Image 1: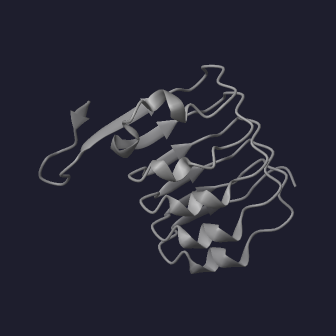
Image 2: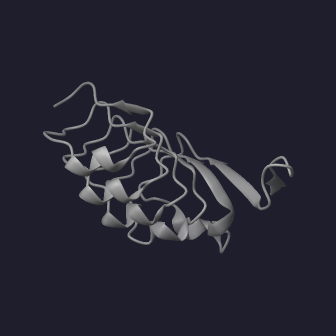
Length: 139
């Protein structure tokens, strides 16, 4: 584990690069008690179909990249990720985004391209810090 610039951060951080690993489940149990140190997770192009309901244990998570999986829904517990700034769930099979996404106040980048969405939650307008929203592709 390493530290980000100590002038700007006071806690250890861990970036997990688990792209193209063939995971069929979100590997939360593999973190062995280090959940609070995880800041960035890359799980692109795996075979994940759902996120765990205890995803809120990743209390310092800032970036979550899940593009190219088989995720059909985001759990309401996504709202517990209060440090989350970037969420990329492009190229999945999402049918909807939960209204509680409006509770993730720090979210700046939300990438929803190439999913099966038919509508977006009204509470997206509560994300005042959102700088980039992309919803292109499949409908």
